Every structure is written in structure tokens, then in C-alpha cells.
Length: 70
Figure 1 (cartoon, rainbow, N blue to C red):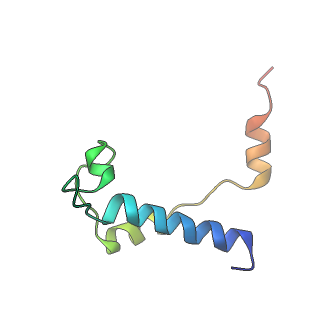
Figure 2: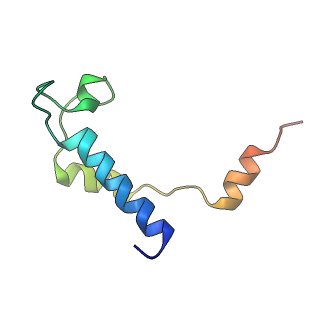
């Protein structure tokens, strides 16, 4: 990808699929279910539905949140 944001999005989808959708033969389930993060294995449709509403904070919001509360 030429843009960093697109690259980050592609990696995020890869890792989400790996952890929530792909059943691993060694643990017989997904890592998210094995770790107690999810109660059941997700489908691709579930992953798309849950990530479509995600709105990451902007750089300004991240900066404001990093400021001390004094």
C-alpha cells in the first residue's frame, strides 16, 4: 500500500481474521475464544459488521487524551 493508513487497515483486518475467524488446529478454536476475548468463533460477516462501525480517534483526539489532567 502506498498510504500508511491503508497498510494499517490491511494489517488490522489480517490480525482480526487470524484471531477471531480462523480456527487453529493446535487449540481447536480461535485464539480469541481460547483467550476468553470472544465467546464464539466469528464469521467473516460478523467481523465486517463489527469493524464497519469502528471509528478510530484522530491524531488531535489522541494528543488531547495524552495531556495531563492537571
